[in-house]
Image (cartoon, rainbow, N blue to C red; front, side):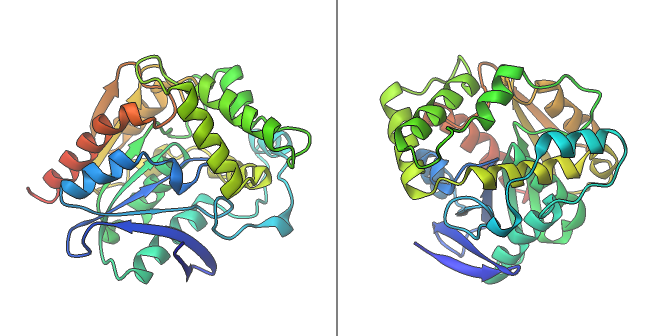
Amino acid sequence: MTAMNANGITIEYEVHGSANDPALILIRGLGTQLIHWPQVMIERLVVAGFYVVIFDNRDVGLSTKFEAAGASDLADLTARQAAGESIDVPYTLEDMAGDVIGLMDGLNIDRAHIAGISMGGMMAQVLAAKHSVRLRSMAAIMSHSGNPDLPQADPAARAALMDTPEDPNDREAAIEAIIASGQVLSGPGYPTPDKDRRKMAERAYDRCYCPDGRLRQRAAVVKSGNRVEMLRTITVPSQVIHGTDDPLLHISGGEDIAANIPNSEYHAIVGMGHETPASLATNLSDLIGDFARRADGG
C-alpha cells in the first residue's frame, strides 16, 4: 500500500514502470478502485514505454472518505438541477481533477498523459480544459459530455450500477450485487468469466465497500452538468473511445465529446460495454499508448 497527502486528502496509488518514461495516469470511474484495472493492460503500457500511475479516487478504495457529508440524495439533486436551482454537493469534478494534479505534484510529474473511464473520463475532460499545461494528451473512454439532450442510460443499467443491499455489512449480498451490476454493464464482445467476476467482486468488497461514497461521486457528476461549452475550449491532443454496446452511457455521449473537442480522434469499439474486462485490455492499452506516443511526436 502506498499513499500520499495531496490536495487536502489522502490518495492511495500505485506506480508501474520507470519514472524516466512519459507518465500516463489512469483514472477509474464511479465507485471502482485501482484494482479494477486489468493487470495485463498496465503491463502492456509499461512495455510500451510509459510510467503508469493508478490510484483510488476520493471516496473509494483506500483514499479519503467524506463520510461526514452523509449519503447524497441523487433524486433530489437531479430534480433541483433540472429545475435550474443551484445545488450543493460534498465536492465537485473540479475537486476530483485537483486530486490528480496533487498526485502529479507529489510524484514530481510535470506533465502527463491522462486516460479516464466513465466518471474518470469526465475528470479527464476537466483536466484538459482547466489544467492543459500539465497534460501531454487526454483520452476519455466510455464517458459523456453531460449534454442532457442525448439518449439516457438504460434504466436497468442505471439501477444495477447503484444497487446495494439493505445491509452493507452483508458481504455475500453486496458481492452478488456487484456481480449483477457487472453482468448488466458488460458488452457482448468482451465477456468476463463468472469465476473471474466473482473473484474481483470479493476482492473489491474486502478491500473497501463504500456505497455512500459512490453516491457522493455521482452527486459530483450531477453538479457538473452540461460540459459541451467547456469541451470546445480544449486544445490538448484528445482521444475519445466508446463501446457500441454501452448500456449505461450511450455511445452518443462519446460521439458528442469528440464532436465538441477540436481535432479530437474518435474510436468506436464494437461489442464493448461499460466495463474494463481483461478481454478488452489489449485493445484499450494499444489505443491509449499509440495515441499518447503520437501526441508526443513519436
